[in-house]
Length: 260
Ligand code: ATP
Ligand code: MG
Figure: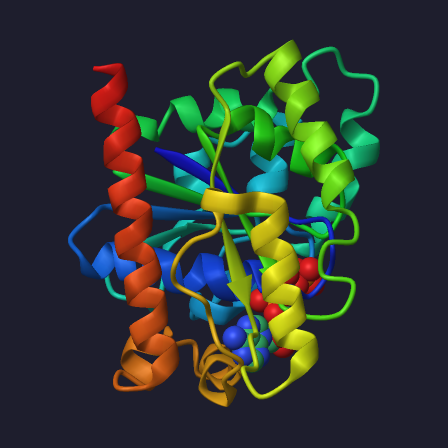
């Protein structure tokens, strides 16, 4: 199953969620690949020991077609997790693919080569609704939307939903939102509480039961190239991301059984 972690709003917890969910799935024994499509490369630098050990990155696979995806997949510092690495060159992807007739399909076509090898492929996306995110939505089976529990948290979600509908209509009819996860929650503040109410009102049962709290440990762990599960295994963040991964696996199973 391919899950794109998407919200074009910046800094809402896409990368933190992608990393820790991937780590949890790998820990559960699921073979897992994290695909970093963000030119910022935050997922890559947060869990790959030496991304500069290879010159190429996903850009060379998607644009030039002269590199196989296998050659830009590295073992991460997170046990059991592989990563297709991003570098700043990914910023050239959008201008390079603009006007290419199959510009939206490059990631989908590329992932066909490795899809069978992994139980889960998680795609970390940049904070835009541009061609990189479109490639991710076209390639994905499911979308996971992190929303920060803050003022203006729902700003932009209408545009995201509209884009999802367009992708469904034009190319990926089976695309579904697997769920919305509320991130960086601070139960002490009214702003956070109001945000949770508004998110639940807007997305109903799509909202995961698990809410991710604001936590310094979650903020610190990438600097040590660790997931929350090894960095602070008994922290609230570790418990919450484990619970979220379990909810995701459950939702993934329900849908699979229904179609089989
Ligand atoms: P971008 O849009 O730039 O890719 P993003 O949506 O991937 O951002 P993150 O990078 O995951 O967001 O998070 C933004 C910042 O908030 C980071 O500094 C991260 O460490 C921090 N952060 C994420 N989740 C939490 C949390 N639950 N508690 C505290 N800090 C968090
Ligand atoms: Mg990010």
